[in-house]
Image 1: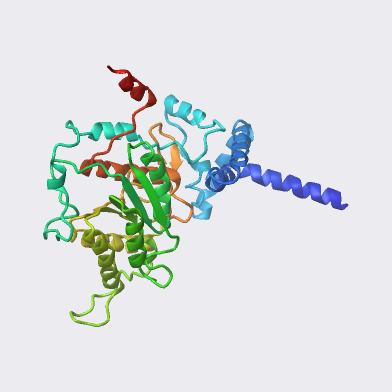
Image 2 (image 1 turned 180 degrees about the horizontal axis):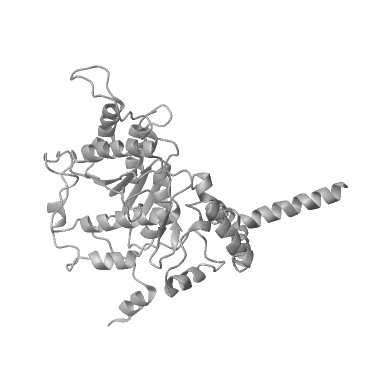
Length: 384
């Protein structure tokens, strides 16, 4: 066999393999290229995916893929090839609409309805009533024993102007969704200072106690959003017994709590309202238990400070039974990927869910106003 024939056979084999796995290839390309250096490549891959779906071979391949799943520990059950078929004509049409090659797999399915959210939560009274200073937290004032996070009152605080997001890679993912949402708010700037693989476990790698103080001086934020703890949770031994009182040897949860006081204390000293976004459910059962312990530590420590609030996210990315799920249905009944393949991070769609939950909590505490449209501004300027 000549080398030309060998190359041709190899090329055909690669094409056939890629087409048979085009659903998975499309997801992989969207995750890495849609918002990156080659959005055109991602668009062409979606074109090929759509052509494949229209052929009879696609249905046969999908059925074979799912039939073989039980023999491989159901590793295919969470892939696009095995998602549930639409139960209604409306869901089928929604699925057909998803074939639009200009629509990425991971974008735009679970949108953050900022305008609708703020319209529902907007107060009936305008700003400037004089209640803002009376309800603002006093710097350095500790929370009461039964208080969790900042003390909430009927009157909302003044609208934030500078919002800072800090934390590990989860915070970086969250800030991608917040960036689009905050852009719709009037007079709010977003500053992002995330550090991959960081936490409180290894200050030699990244000292968050020092870094946070630098960022507070640099940006002078009104609100700080923190999402961190996934890397630190790996050090937790869920079966470890607490040390006797006065012992010099402390458990990692105790060490983490002490370092956490350093961060929250810095925010309390400046009177900056802050929201610690809890860890969502994790795909690995053992790591999920560690993450739950981490969330309890975060919740307990945040409750000690009047400027801090812990926000639960554990159930935001679960299925109807409360279990971890890579895919969740959107409002059209189409399943959208919300978690990354490592079962720790979330996709942009998953980040949108977390961002919308945070904005809902923030809107209950502080005035948030959507930007006025150009038409509204023009009408207002034409008034006598």
